[in-house]
Image 1 (cartoon, rainbow, N blue to C red):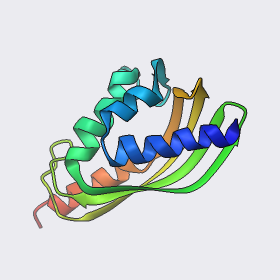
Image 2: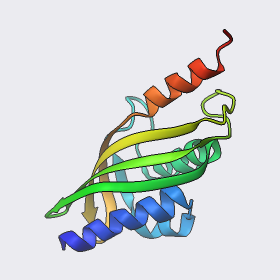
Image 3: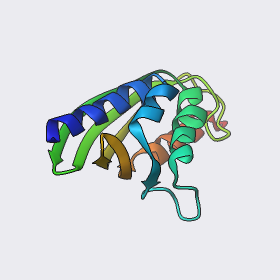
Image 4: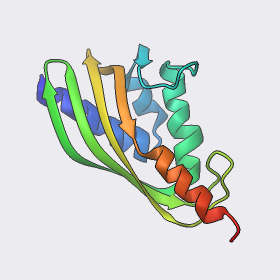
Length: 140
């Protein structure tokens, strides 16, 4: 079971995050999915997860790649340490493209139920990347 769950997470990272495949997203994320890491007051449902990749990350970063560094699985949990890389070639939260290479470090915990993402907890360095891009765009 643990190896199957790790494969679900690997598939999600490649097909959904890197490739932007909506059909894979539909297959891999449960209807009642909950993102436990959503900011307070922000939506934490299935559609908001898709929005994060489809409307925020993928338009902002070309050549998007996800590299899984480590995975640990136990029971219905998979913890993954990964690196997301891309080129800042589109607007990101109002920040004009800089052309800079970006690296986002991520640690995710996902609960898999019936082969689908049911819950997610995570930490990442996206805010630090945003701060760096803002600085790169600042005059002076």
